[in-house]
Length: 226
Image (tube, rainbow, N blue to C red; front, side):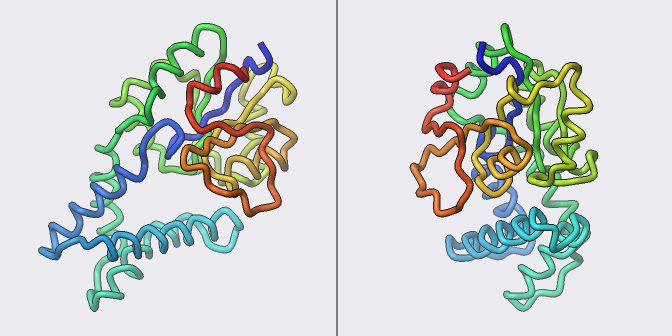
């Protein structure tokens, strides 16, 4: 085996976050009796992505992101909402979404026989645990590392320090990060001296200076690497 230790991202790597996010936002709009147009959803998605990128760069705190994003978003529609309350409601809706990326369960089942599988995610601990459990993936995972409990988000090296210190006999040369985010998963791996796999099913162009060790468009391609 080239990489007996595999560190998987969750959202849009193992689970379809886009589908879960859309369902959760739809339910929020249902509660305020407003239609969720494609433009409104795209506005939210872009705003949210921007906030998470700011978190990764250390520009805002997790608490600021979570407690203000819906207040900021709905203010565009003339609504003054309780950001904390809306975040709590959204979190409940989101945690119910656990559509797998194609072949994700089969891949984890195959790899679990000869590899140690770990989760490395910037998501919320309770949400990610429920989604992985209800998707049937949790049983293949040795341990989850969530930035909320680690105290640092990917791509910060402190996040990976915590991971390395928590895994017995951790070896950088035999560990591989698998994720969809160039600014989080791949950059974090590169900065820490870990090889990485960029999961890029949409064949997006890499316009960053961060280069993954490998790139795949389908999850099952990972079996040929590890």
